[in-house]
Image 1 (cartoon, rainbow, N blue to C red):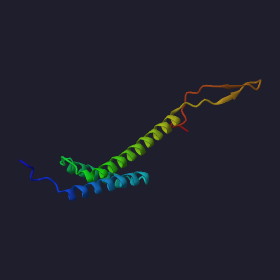
Image 2 (cartoon, rainbow, N blue to C red):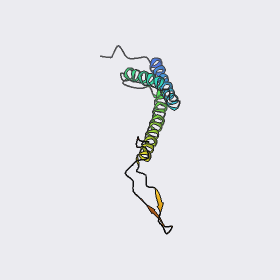
Image 3 (cartoon, helix red, strand yellow):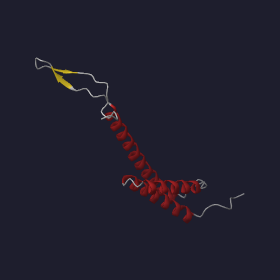
Image 4 (cartoon, rainbow, N blue to C red):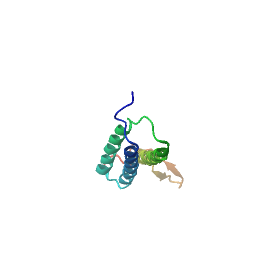
Length: 123
């Protein structure tokens, strides 16, 4: 028995276009640090994916749109991973202990240890 609720090809294609555009908007909002708009994009993307999950077979002509979506999603993943790595590196830098250089009475530099961090919270 065939499914009665199978989506028409034009509807699927329109949903694919919406998904691609939403993924692109998500990236632009992330770059602009517009978090409320980005979160709205995430919710819209999830809703579109939930609807598209019911599609059992994609028409061969529409597979190029699915590849575009996959590429756009990979671009977002790369942006988010690179940003996360940058934040982690920055936090690691500011969390390091400082070691000031001092000079002995003979003019020789020596490293001294201090039990503080670059950002210790104290003045």
